[in-house]
Length: 202
Image (cartoon, rainbow, N blue to C red; front, side, top):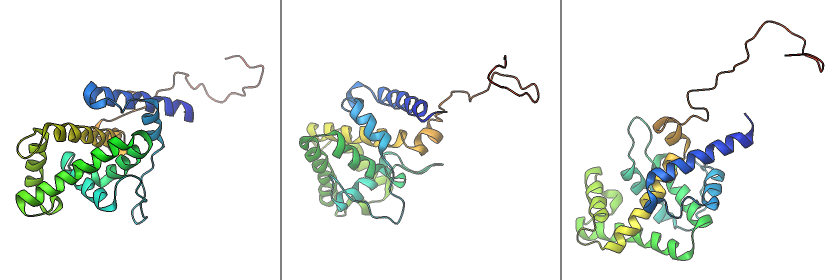
């Protein structure tokens, strides 16, 4: 398979994932720039430092916890475990303006400060059940969260889903993505040894 064909196949797959997220959530994710950035993202191997682009190191670690709460580990790793938080930082830098950067920073700050106020602990210190409850309240704009914060969190969730389901883990294990659905089967029967030259007939 040529690199060009592989890239085209992946692009079609990414577009299908975005459409499945729904028009509202996929808005801003489906442009050529977003797809190109996603295709060019490479996860930083464990042990190597990651140079943040939009988020601070503290925000990135908080986002990792949020990613793992939205898509937790089951038979496959959670979203944070495969580096979706780094992918989001990458996408924000390449595909979004300062307004979106500030909104994503702000919603992460809201998650942390409200956790401290309600539970007396940072979001990372909450058990898994409380983390789910906390984000569910945000997603439904329950007290103390506002509708605008709910909207911003939905955009963050869309980025988490986009990052996870376009990763190798999400595509090959969760969605069982195949460049050739059903597998590739050659159609030319093998008839033994043949010397195919420039004048050979098939």
